[in-house]
Image 1: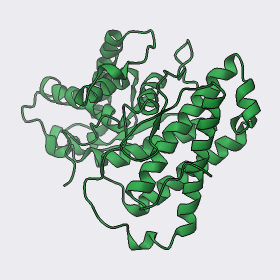
Image 2: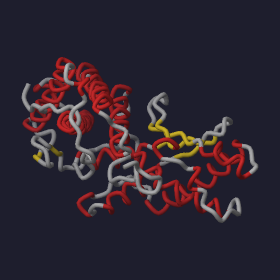
Image 3: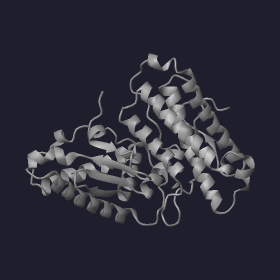
Image 4: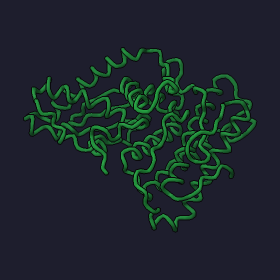
Length: 333
């Protein structure tokens, strides 16, 4: 069953879905009020998985590109650039209104207060309030998720109130994955390394750690982590940290949009594992008991945030191993 533009990617965890959920009603409203059209033209929206594309080449930002203006140009008899500019103006006004309602205090939501679809609504509300929209001369509408929206998503993922979806269709692991024993083993090593680092940080008193989740070994960090500085800037802003964030976002966007196959799952897992290895190598305190235990002052917040990223990556790797690669997710090296 293919996702549809009204419901797919509007999951409790997908950043792409949160952006889509924010822009769709504004688009429909402008279709009526701005262009005087009565049919909603949902047919030109296409699947959100096609129409709203994650832009991987934008450094240090989660960005999506929307090519809707080109689909509407012939119907509205307007240039794509004009359509894109009108949409960007309308969307930015909606974002300004949402940000006013959310408030400027950078407080992260208490996910324990929300259930099921309420989490989807809450994620969309907070993420949309952080977005910024630009119209390019090419007619592309670009939507960038701000630090606050990314922090809300990371906050929910580390506490495991947002989580990967169940696999909708049961099928055997692809035959071409079965011979890739070494590649899968390296992903299992990365998962076990995450578990060791999380136990290490918990023993040092840097984080709290709880077992959670439906599959064996599901862990969560119940405490709110300092994802944002007092100025509302994301703590994990170093290039290596943010590349890991981007990889995790890409995996989970694909998961809820039903774009994952065993082959793409293997590639996703390798990308996440590679970024974890880079992160582990970049920070001396990251892998040493003494380093974590001795962290003080501002370093504490940075270590806690990195452990939050490790926890999310561990859950994502475990989900890919269990659900798509037919392999165990070891908790010991």
